Length: 260
Ligand SMILES: [Zn+2]
Figure 1 (cartoon, rainbow, N blue to C red):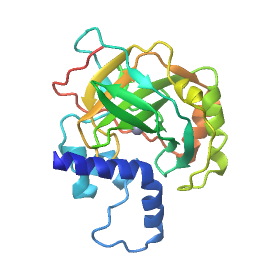
Figure 2: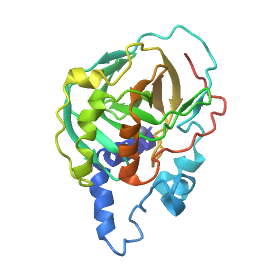
Figure 3: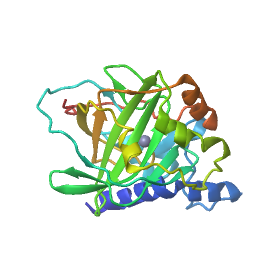
């Protein structure tokens, strides 16, 4: 349990503060032996190497409920509606060097079995990380929630190519001038945050992990079946930020239960 919590705190701090550490690292010419080696999506720091970059990342190669996955439902049950109570808007938007992340003001909660998972941030991957019945999407958003003792729950939204997304237009407007590691305000209301989820809230549910180092497991995943749309130009704007995709390839599902 202790191990999970410490991974989780690393995970959370890396998700929330990565910008600072990766930014600092690029300025250190000779990192000490104890420094966490920078990870990325290409070449020798890409996903297939994550588990070897640092002992703290070993779940990336040793875990057996890793994310993302190709979602092939194994059981059709009557899943309860997601109890999402989003009442706060954005605090800031940041390009942390791996993704664009919108941090949320305290107060929005996802209740799961009597426990409050607080919405911390949402961020994006292109192309999508999870696949649904073998299909990939051009963009996937992850809404990251955590309990006070560090348990994690993610709600994922797929985007397919179509009309421009008006909420993303507002966020994307900040991208061209967004300095890596520097948070700026992006002025999304609670209503706009909620509008980044489909009206049809049917979803898939399964256990998984963070899709970035340290790849901590015990993460509760919820993926909406219905995608929203994003324009081709919006996809390109995001892709150009990094010059490559920022999606981890799908991982083995092993004997995982995937409910719908
Ligand atoms: Zn993510």
